[in-house]
Image (cartoon, rainbow, N blue to C red):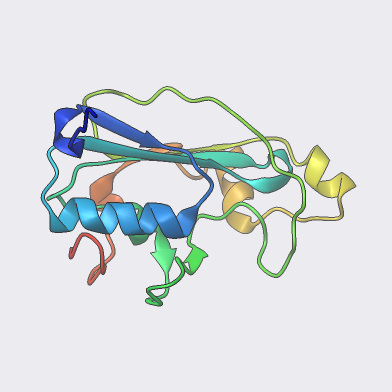
Length: 154
């Protein structure tokens, strides 16, 4: 049986849709000082857009920095969520994205609101700002680091 260690890879990409499992893996990566880059990608419901974050264990700026709340069982509320709070979406989408290979940072993109409106859902203020160009689609990790993050310890 062949076994590999995460440090045997240059990049590990997670797009599982399992935030709790991803959170555990990212915390392990920082705790064990993995050398590989980690990329997490996920999409918003109803074609509103998506997110991708490239992280480097050992450096501040991780996926958990984008969330509010300290509960170790859940992420909490995504600070850059594109669906207004208090709604229950039932339609998911897929997407694709290319990230710069030399930078760690956070890329987000806003899709159309047509599907959301058909489902009676409303986009967030962040989605509107992203669509209008008031928010940059790519930001470097220094702009979203959360002081006291339980994962990266920034």
